[in-house]
Length: 285
Length: 259
Ligand SMILES: Nc1ncnc2c1ncn2[C@@H]1O[C@H](COP(=O)(O)OP(=O)(O)OP(=O)(O)O)[C@@H](O)[C@H]1O
Ligand SMILES: [Mg+2]
Image (cartoon, rainbow over all chains, first blue to last red; front, side, top):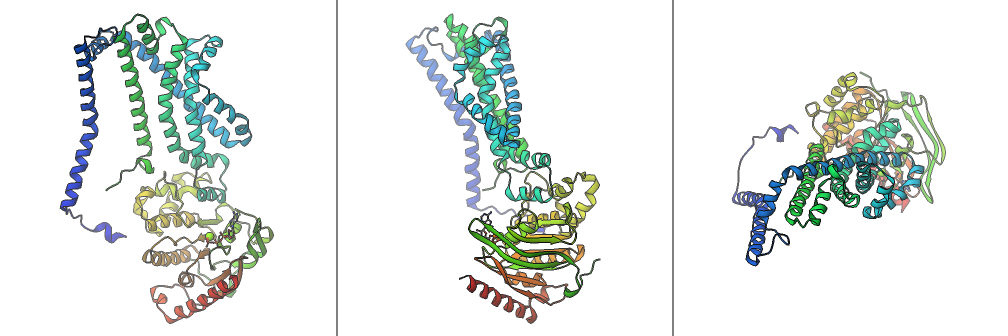
């Protein structure tokens, strides 16, 4: 063992390795550069088409106008963004608690699983936009209604993935836990939950995007809301007023929010798994 | 240091009497009777499918015999039993030290309480410098050492090993065989060791149960009457060659009987 470890580190780089490193560097840069170039080109073309054809701004605004609108309406749009973000994150939090809680419950009791799993599936496959109007009839609180809608969309991937994860613990390890007389709780805590973590995080990334979708869709259904309105309502409202630039500006904010949520959850996942899980390991070559 | 007594003077640890195990229509094990004595190093040697793993699963209590009886002189308590599987079976999310902590942890002991035992076990397998490493950072042989450290950290009376070194290269395997004997001597436990390898079984054990398949059964017991400690000198001796020939002949008989 120790022979190899003590060997001096020799830095011999042949031509092939050099070439490979170079191509890797190029690829790394291209990963960032290409989308930026494509975006720039796309925006340029868009601006050009609008200007060339003299398209009126209430039909298609150019990107510069959208940007100026975004800056001009920033206070109002940012307020709306915060509302949407609040609903999204709250729904995600409830989805995590509900999804993981149900997964553990189902895992601990086959009876409960048999009784309720089908309904979880039904809830998942029914489009939320079809359920939402009913929800707003029965639930007075607008926030609670929005939350419920977003939760319905977001909890299932967490439930499904966590359930899969809890059942995927290594068989020999399970045997080992049995031999050492582990209690149910110990098995859950020390074996099943850690095994489920990568699966849960995969579900969480999906759920993050879905809860934003849920929040937006629900707000479309919920309609007017005065001060408490989020981005979706601002889009609707701007649509009625033919304020197309503002629609685009709000859309950009929603997309950016989705991207940030995804990146944030991916980062979280990476940090939690980087020490041990295959998915987060960097490999040479 | 506990000294291993001669074969015929060892007090009994447990016994199997006419143990059968069937899975549906498959007879995995038929009429197995054997007495395990304290300090034995028993190898179960036989072709694939002859019920070796089944014997270990029965002894470890993961399965019950279809008929026949297992009797213990002292019913084993939680930590009287250590197990090593063919794969290292470590928890990938836990460090080496946390993995070795597991048997104690499941007893409700804190890390601080048993830190000395954990470090001692890791020192015995030569991995005390790797406490904070994760399993993925270790080689196959090192992972196996961690697995062995975990099995012996509680100083169990009996360690069950199911082809623990089958996936390793020969050099690593020889090294681990030597280390295993030293460890056993040190903690004075009993070992039941499953292997496909005649050489390994002769080097390690003082009793070899040769098994045949379909139905799985013991067809012969050999005694390897060579004193411990055994080392590389023993591995190249004519005495060793003689024992391997005997074991190999018995194994051939086993294969023919099954055919
Ligand atoms: N859980 C099970 N269900 C059904 N059949 C089983 C089960 N476990 C073992 N068997 C059967 O019992 C027989 C003995 O299996 P066992 O695993 O004990 O063999 P083995 O000697 O350990 O083989 P190997 O050397 O390949 O590991 C085999 O024919 C196997 O198919
Ligand atoms: Mg086996």
